[in-house]
Length: 148
Image (cartoon, rainbow, N blue to C red; front, side, top):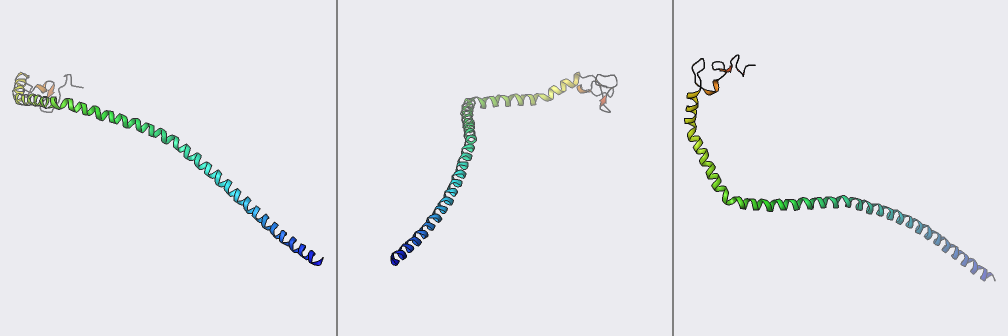
């Protein structure tokens, strides 16, 4: 009987020790579950933040696509424009150059013709730009429309 009681006492102690281990294991599992819950909450917040940042990025991507397609259109149209003027531009440039050279060559005779028609000022100069001006002081004459 004593041996049976001793065996029962030993078994009870073993069961108590295992109960203590089971309680510690349950506490550790509870702490682990709480940590996982915090991690899941943080991960959910991070995913929400990424989704929130993704919307403006998607809108920006759409705007950039529109801008780039517009740039492609402009580049294509400018190529067409350059091709259209490639043949006409040299002849237009030559014509303009001839006009400029003619004006330059005739500027002396025009200046002489204008100068001969200009009235003489009190100093006797005959410049067209002197009408209403005092040539010696380069100021408007009193009573002229330029006098104020």
